Amino acid sequence: MDEKIFNISVSPNELKAVAADLINMEFNNSYVVLSFIQTYTSMPEDENKPPIRNGVVMSRVMLSWEHLVRFNANLADFIKATKSHAEKNSQKAFELVENIKLPEVKNEQN
Image 1 (cartoon, rainbow, N blue to C red):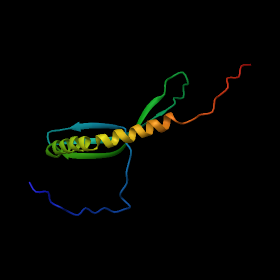
Image 2: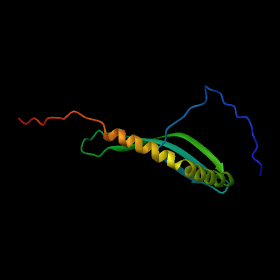
Image 3: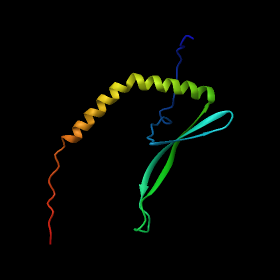
Image 4: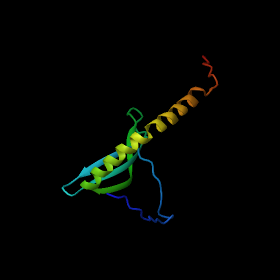
C-alpha cells in the first residue's frame, strides 16, 4: 500500500503535551480505550499510615481493534529504530548524575 501524504491541522490553543507514567486499558467488542494517567503521592492525615498513591487521567484515546494492532506494530518499529538513540542519551544523563558533586553533610551529635 502506498503511503499517502496528508495535511494535519490543529488549533494552538487546543494543542498540549501531557506526561503520563501509567496507562490503563479497557476494551469491549468494538474498541479499546487507553487512559494515560499521571500519578503522584500524597501524605495521609494520619502520620502513621504510608503515603497514598493518586492519579489524574490526563488523556483518553479510543482505538478500534484494527487501529490498535497497527499502532502496536508501528510502536514496535519506532522502538527498534530509536533504541540506540534513547540508550545513548540515557547513558549521558546517568553520567551527568554520577559527576554531580554534593557538599558533605556533617553529622552533628548533641
